[in-house]
Length: 229
Ligand code: ADE
Image (cartoon, rainbow, N blue to C red; front, side, top):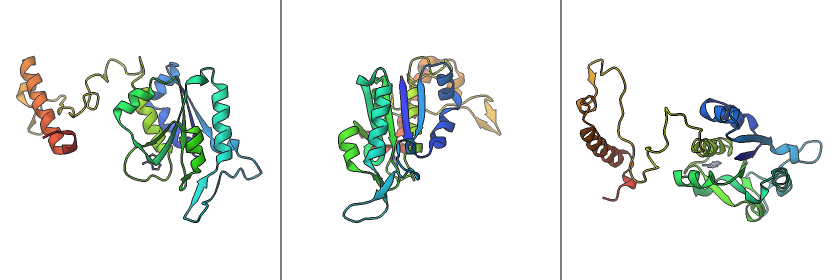
């Protein structure tokens, strides 16, 4: 899979995605992530990429020209461009969920545009963008961190990216409607705080029942919106 990210702040994306499992996935060529400076597609001495809003209103919008040129270039450079899927990071988008990460992982080529200022000229959305995506109901200064979140969630699901130490099979959100049960590690007693004895019992049926019960309890407490009752 290849992922091209277009942003005014490449370091905000490049540095975090160079770490840990996503960094190792790139070293192992399991994914090819390229981060691009939008200004590289802007004309003129000052490489301006934004302008004021028609009809009035605050702030500046990213203009069509650099984004149209960037997307056309990146599509043409990719051999599998027939499956280039273009995502725009914006607080006006659909809210990101695990299932969207699964679906995005099926594409051979993602192009992710990071919005900035008050947004982008809407002709970009109409002509270039397949999916407008938000990471939640809050406004960030730009889409770079949001794009980083998306790429992390997508890439960790790709084959061979997660080592044996971590599994994406039995986790919250792969199991819609239920969060994961609490988990503990050594020591069994820390400052008088004991690990629930059932987890030390070796009785797998009992452990499994306890985890199910705790998962329901935790979901009701932290995410009542996920439970039906
Ligand atoms: N840009 C600014 N805020 C955002 C958000 N919540 N999600 C995606 N992109 C954004």
